[in-house]
Image (cartoon, rainbow over all chains, first blue to last red; front, side, top):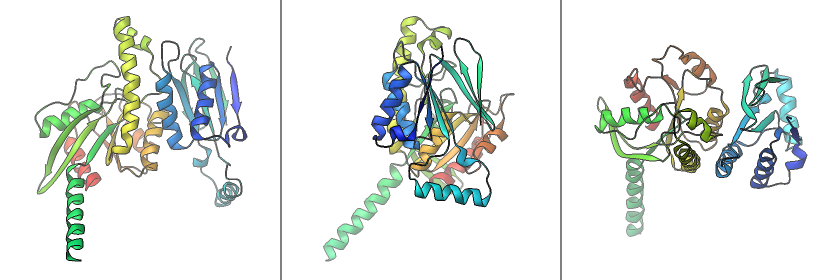
Length: 131
Length: 210
């Protein structure tokens, strides 16, 4: 059975980067796929890879990670202005989402301009998450 | 007063020369993109010796490898740097992949353990780099999260980047896809194995490090 766990900005906003990444990694090590509201900082992404490597053993083979960055979509001037204002008024406003899954379950997360495909290890069935 | 000025001037000169002498050029990228093949090409061209071994099995380079004081020349210009070849950065390392590649269980587990340490070391070394050549396999999807994470991190750290799309000698190579994926960066297509476009690559190195 495939379990997806949604993690909101609200849940993470008071945590340090390290605590945030440990929380994510603990969920993933529990064989669940994390759907994270928003994006990690670039430094946090690389730190997540580093922490993951420290945990790799015969049972835990690492993670699959994919970031959907909707801030890079082409938008009109007014849409951009609205989003800029939102990020000023709500500092934790963080566009996009991030999927992090355990490598023993998630074979690959493919991204193209309109969809993210999660390819699982056992069934090799594709689950599409359209945006 | 004169002594203070002299000391300041000496320190300034020392820092300039130290900087020039100790420039660290890192080779980063995912496993099996051809980082060590490129490192060997550069080192053979200018020092006459190789940096490390290459293999079709991923994670052949599992330790940071450094070739110091490589001086490359173009016309009257000279450029000296320390070349740092790093292990490929990956988010997953599965010893069973090495079993499938023909290694024994013991070898596969050892390789996996060393590879994880290699990724950690490569990440730790990011902060030491003065400039980085990101080596990508031009036959593969350039939008992989590892590529985006490496390049995003270098950008966040203000480290100058040159992207090399390697393996353009292969039929499946798609240089345009790599160029289109990173429009804000200088991307050059090469074949490190065959030396295709390598002179253009050296010209780009001068631009990157000057």
